[in-house]
Image 1 (cartoon, rainbow, N blue to C red):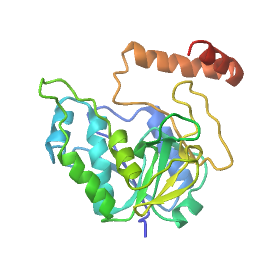
Image 2 (image 1 turned 90 degrees about the vertical axis):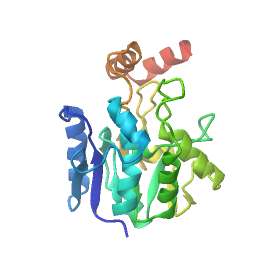
Image 3 (image 1 turned 30 degrees about the horizontal axis):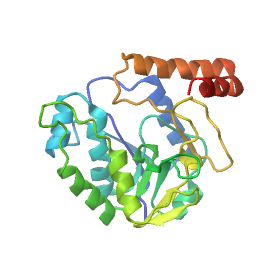
Length: 247
């Protein structure tokens, strides 16, 4: 059974931004009987493995969370959300079917399949697949031999694990290693390249792509914000046309 607790991570000395607080409010709205627990430096050992120690010292806290979420779920079970996930419908039916993850992209609409734990995860405690993921993190180095950041996110590692276990990513719910892998439309209706959101009757949550591992002062991130603002101002059709024009 999946415990009635929602976990999230927030490392560093900055307060939660308004956008994160709004997302957490949405969890409270649709999971009224759940405990919500923040994990931070006070209740999680950021030096538990070299990867998280180095990421924390480098102040790249999202990479610490990459490992922490699986450690938390392996030892406790429950649901994990990133703080940029807004819930818009109850998860009742999904939770009845057991542990889950979601696809960020699939083979039907995209060139490649990507399983993205940042969209949300539900787990029972002591699931073997999470033990395997934790072991894989033990083998990762945050810095390369030259001293540069590897910049390796968890998505390729998790996706490879499930692909080797038989994942097809063909827009159907697939049961792999005790986990239901849901199509993109369930937890990821936003196109990260355009900011366009396409909600269907199956959509339960929206990943806002706050991308906390990206330096928010870079041109890349500023363009990401600008793109979303243009979408809000001009609407779907115009932004889609502009996107096709500059591809």
